[in-house]
Amino acid sequence: MPTGPFDRRTKRSRCTQCATSHSKCSGHYPCTQCQRRRICCGFPTLPSSARGGIIALDRGKHLTAKTFTTKNAPQAPLPDMMGSYLYYFDIFIQRNNFTGREPSFLADVKSLMKVAHRPGEPGSPLLSAALALGSMQMHNLSVDTKRHVSLRFALESYAQSISGLRDAVSSISSHMDVLTRAGILWTTFFLGLFELMQDASGQLWLRHMVYGTSQALIASGPSACTSGSTRTFFIQARTFEVCRSIIFNESTFLSNPDWLQLTGNLLGDSLTGEWSPQDALLDLVVMCSNLRVRTAQFVEALSAPPTVDNITIAQQLAAEGFCLRDALESWKMESASSAATEDEIALAKTFFAATSIYLSGNYDYDMQLWQSFKIPIPILSLEDVTKHFDAIILFSRAALKGSSLSPLLFLFPLRVAGARAREIKQRQAVAEMLCRVKKDFVVAKAFLTELEGLWGRCDDLERQV
Image 1 (cartoon, rainbow, N blue to C red):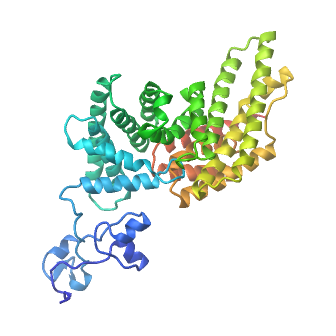
Image 2 (image 1 turned 180 degrees about the vertical axis):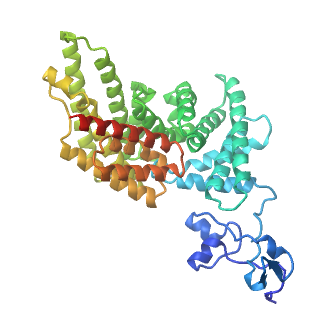
Image 3 (image 1 turned 45 degrees about the horizontal axis):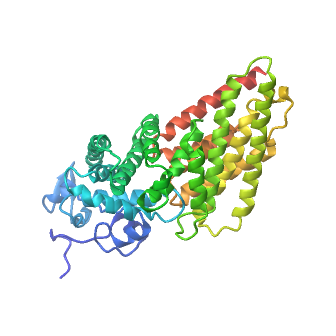
């Protein structure tokens, strides 16, 4: 028998998202519609007045049962919140795709986390890191008054994971099994992602990448990344190491010949479907970053007047730039026939445009110096820079609006585009998208602040001319 308007028994209702879209709701938490659409599921809460009598007096107004909202939907099936936090961890992974392909690594991560329920096992910090991400995702998506509960749990889980990771790292030995090493790798990776959500400076993430994730990969060696869970991890983490090196103009171990050989071998492996032609672009980004580091060192140590050796090195650096420019154009033609996913194509085109501008900047930011050498350099025309800028804005905006690609992936392209933004409209477009990234990852604020300072200095110089 259906409940009447004055019946206090539980009345099942639609969740907020299904009610808004006039869709049929299963009534479970999370409901099947929200799971299918990969959106946050929530049910309307019951005001405190509705838990009292049938008619209540509030500031002289009579409230009847017609003004009451429906009671909360049934609680999550698990007796504690761990199931909910892991559910939101899945949502975080689905919303933060780092390659454009299906996140097949999730099965590996869940297998590694199964040992976390046994105290003292190395999987424990991995589970805590996943719970930290999941509870932070719940905090960001929730609109109720209990958001502080998930935030507190996220910070506590993060601290617990850090402590467990220290213990696990201190016990590393040459006899450590592959799964244990993989658990440590994933823990450093997830902790870094959590820090990008919490630390506006990005310094904590930077330390984790340089002294944590990168060092763990170096210790494992390229041979460990050819198969199994370590290979799966390398494919995911490689993009972040590439972005780190190019954003901070620092060298990376990925530019070493043995690691380049590894990526070349993986590129030729078409059996697993985990590697695509788009990944070849990351090798070019790595080489452009390495070239930038060496060029900056050369310019800083340059003597006046330049010696014969200086001119020889300058010619070599310019020739290397032309080779990379040709390689980028060759990649563009070869990738046109790639059977990649829509997200892969969008990400690759964004990175291609950003890398093309970045390579030009290796030379045109020191234009007077190179002109004094009278050496041809691989710079782009203003028209080409504008075309690449427009491509970055176009693909970044579309991806941030309607794809599962992680917003973090667009920090490098937007930073490159922002450095070339001269018109107010261009700057507004870059700032708009960095603000969009900041909603999920507060570290974007540091990029926006840096660009605003750069724009101010550029305007001051133009006024002085």
